[in-house]
Amino acid sequence: MDLISYAELAVLLVNRPDRLTGLEGVRTLLEESGRPPQADRLAPGDLDALRGLRTELVTVFEAAAAGDEREVVDRLNALLRRHPVHPQIAAHDGEPWHLHLTEGGRFCDQYIVGAVMGLATIVTDLGADRLGLCRAAPCRRAYLDTSSNRSRRYCSERCASRANVAAYRARKKVGQDSGGL
Ligand SMILES: [Zn+2]
Ligand SMILES: [Zn+2]
Image (cartoon, rainbow, N blue to C red; front, side, top):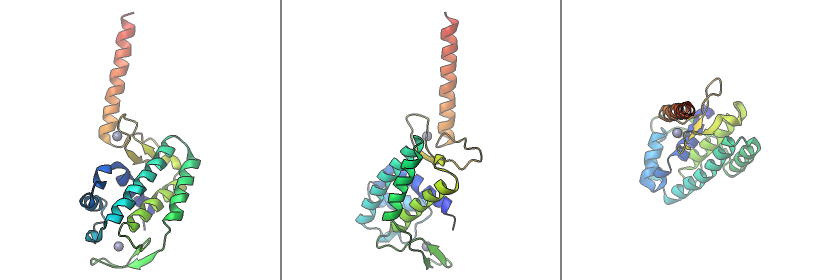
């Protein structure tokens, strides 16, 4: 089980509040996350649970972006207590036996436990500074920095080049202003 890849579930949830306006959006979110099986079992309770989790995950990423490791850990520990792991071996939709982190009453519990365990694994294996919020204002989308030299600053290539262009223009403007003096 690749727990680090599960952290992508947290990023997806933080970055797509537009998917949490109704159950249809949540179905799309599950497809995007690669976890579509039995999405027809979704109930309104799942929507509320995912919205609640998203709010909490945003604060985790904000604490990480502010460099507050203690806050990141405290918030993740609170989430781990509320969403405990109860591993079960399962097989469905023609898949071979595989581990589920939990079999909760709600469909979304697996998603939630996966997202929280994924973040906890990143923090303990790689460091809390691997969670970030995009610095190309006003973007602020979440990202995971799995680069070998911890160099990631932006959520996407698009934001990185937008920030580079803005920095270049700012430098050029400073050059022109000082040239006129
Ligand atoms: Zn499964
Ligand atoms: Zn961005």
